[in-house]
Every structure is written in structure tokens, then in C-alpha cells.
Image 1: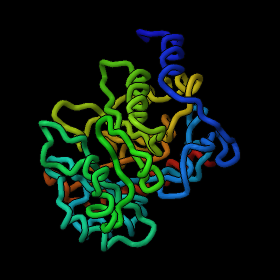
Image 2: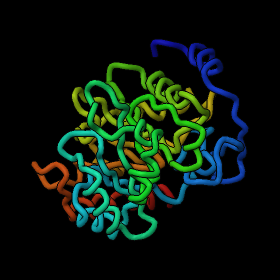
Image 3: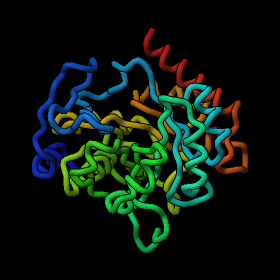
Length: 298
């Protein structure tokens, strides 16, 4: 590694606040004591050891890039825990009207996740976290039943939203950069205005010109190494894996990295049709995740 553990120790102690930690919930995990409220975010879980999912009953599954209600219903029936609705851009982007139709069809206990990006010169027209801060959580997204957001960029989270939303943050993993530093920088962005750890830090492969759905994997062993380094100096959120996952490789990803969640988009789509999900591929993917969980639990 280009920088030693001492570098991260000094930087993290300056950048991150002290957190009260309790070990009373999940085996192998530590849960922050006073950071969250009783709303959608609840108490915010943090990881004190690598291999967080080793103590969990199962890996959570998110099918992302849903564009049709029938695909959302099928994903739910097959056992997905969450679906992703893209308000960011690209071929899987949908509008609020389409999202309303999809969310209305979801059965209970399946979580819709809205993908949002910081508004900038490149994304002037996309709904963004600024919309939520300016009333969108009341007038735009909450009526859809969406209170979980996957955020791209260094969004500040205002105090009045902390108890109303669940936050995923995205860290794009570049092959030519140290992953420990990339995770550290991503978590530093979580402290832009209020102490609010993301419930999930989603690691996706960095591909130029794409925010997701690239079909490209990264080396999952790098996450294990980085968790081991960072856990010595800070509390870590739950980790999700994305980027090139499919039924053939997701079991290996779970065996190596033990993520809290896996996130798939292109790996369960009809070939050549972004946003159109293949029921057989979704079934095979979910079965592969469950088989990997069973193998780890045996």
C-alpha cells in the first residue's frame, strides 16, 4: 500500500467524530448508540470487524434498474429484498410517474430505493438530494412510499431528515487507487452537515462515463483487506457489493467479502435490453445468493 496505517489513523481521528458503540445486537457487529432516531433510519449500525455478514442470517438482495412494474413484482415474488429506481440518468432512468406505478405494485416489506445524484452542470435536470432538502421528501418521493435513497456524491444530510430516511452511499472502486483511501474519502463525505453514517456503503466498479450497470467487477479481496485496516481506527457501515454480479459469480463474491447486501442490474437483464429484467436470471441469481448463505452457515 502507498500509505501506512498511521496515515489513516491520523486522518480518521481528525475527520470523524467519536461514536458510542454497543455490542448488544448482531454477533460480530457493533451498533452505534446515539446517532440515529426512531424513524426510517433508526439506530445506525456500524461494523467493528471485517466479514460483517458472517453473523447475519442471510445476504440482502437488491435488484436495481427496475423500469417496469411487472419486473418489480417478479423480483419481489422471487425473494428480492429491495428494488432500485434510477432517477440519475442512462438507459434505466425513469420518471416519477413510472416510479409511482412500480411502487404501487410492490408487496409489503419490499423496499423501493431511489437513486439520486448531486445536481451539477452535468445533471441539471435529474431529481437530486437538493429536492429532498427543499421539500421533495414531502411533495415528491414520500407519497410514492420511498424513504430509502442511494446517493451519488457528497450530499449533506440535514438534521430534520435524519429520522425520515434510510441512506445508501455509493463508493466507486477504481482499480488504480487504494481502496482503503477510497472508502475513507466516501465516509468523510457522509459528514457534510450532520453526523449521519450511511446504513449501507455500496461499492461499485468505477467505469468512466457510467454511474452503475456497467457489468464490470472489481477484486472483492481488496474489500477484505481494507475492512481489516479501517476497522482498527473507525466504525464502519454495512457494505454492499455491486458491479458485474450475476448468478455465476455472486456466490464467490459472498464467500470472499461477506457483504451485507448484493446489488445487481445488468446481470439479470435480457441481453441487449437495459432495464428489461429476465425472470430466469433473477431467479438464478437469488438462488445462488441463498446457496452461498447456506454454505457459509453450514
